[in-house]
Amino acid sequence: EDLKVSNEAILYVNGVRRLLSDGLAHFTLLEYLRDIGLTGTKLGCGEGGCGACTVMVSQYDRILKKCSHYAINACLAPLYSVEGMHVITVEGLGSCKRGLHPVQESLARAHGSQCGFCTPGFVMSMYALLRSSQTPPSEEQIEECLAGNLCRCTGYRPIFDAFRVFAKTSNDL
Ligand code: FES
Ligand code: FES
Image 1: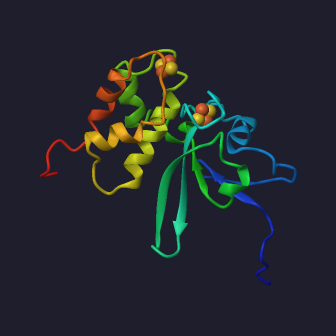
Image 2: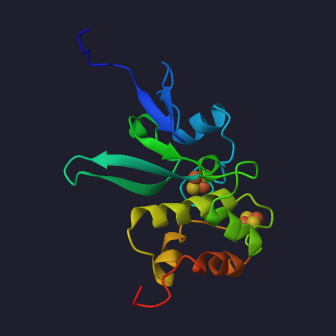
């Protein structure tokens, strides 16, 4: 059989290959995700300021010959801007049924989640930081990676405390 070049628009979401049907060109990634039932990613502002819609995208870099991972605001990303990439949402990390990811577990245990609406975004910012580097981040890098996430409830301290366990504690590590 001949190998045909496909004109299909494809997206991977939490490990599942998804064909993008026609008529989605005006969708943001956030609208698309919520539309397919992944409502863990929230709409807080729709203008890139609150981080409630943070997801991680992964892309193979042909020049560097490796996968790069970064956090993006799904509310600002046109759906087709991530075509061919892999999107991980909070549902892709873990769940109460399957078991929580350490980032989720730690945030919940350290009382870093009150109303909970900002929580998926904080989790995804932290997860993307961990995935994007080979070595544990510093505490400064952790605070920096959360700069685009707002929380109205906790005062932030329990969130930083929850994530501090992922920081390297000395330069020897
Ligand atoms: S919803 Fe606020 S940054 Fe996307
Ligand atoms: S826990 Fe309510 S906004 Fe963060």
